[in-house]
Length: 324
Ligand code: GLV
Image (cartoon, rainbow, N blue to C red; front, side, top):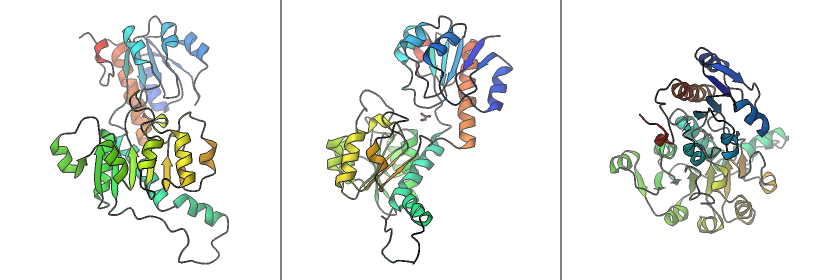
């Protein structure tokens, strides 16, 4: 039986699925292995199922002579040095599709929470401040009929546009490539230049993958162009937003608020964010529904098993490593 390392705890039913086919070495914890231990445990493995907090760099891969596949349990794979894997002929896979709606639901929840001050309202009630009903307390911003700007119009960005339809919103998007006109029509979405998107959005939501090109794609220049009433949402990857610039923008009123599920240096959160009332913060949980996390784990295991059994995996991100 091929040997596979599962780097952190995933749903038990999925582990059992893998056990039928492979000899599993499971690290049954919810935190990454120290690097030396990861390297040591990978020495005799053909497959690795890992999470986004596992840093799979050139050094880790160089110690794993028999490794054939790194199956990330995430759609993003910026935690893996894909070029180094490709050089070694190691297949890298991700989990696209299964988390699209769950992630968009959560990004939408952040949008609603910031606009309508849900977390502030919750803190207000818990603090015993609801002593009399007041006409002018905790006033938020309307969502219905506003302009949603989507930066990155892939699966999740489009799912956001679809939700916006139910809120009577105008949808603008920016993507390096314009999408099929039929998709634009279906979603009532209009392609605009990035500067226009940033300027015209009441809600700007980021859904690009983290790449050298998208690093800090929302920084001081963009934040200064945004409406003072605008709200920024990031449930993609933290480093797309220049966190220090965002703190300044929120403190100085360049924009009105932010909803963040991701941070530049997770699990560290910029201390400035923690003191601001106009931000809603979450610990990278946009895909965290029971159903979706189970589907993601099963998909990664399926990818891993395919490669160790000499089959084509369903979701390669470096298909050039597949010969047939
Ligand atoms: C989660 O962040 C993912 O990329 O799936």
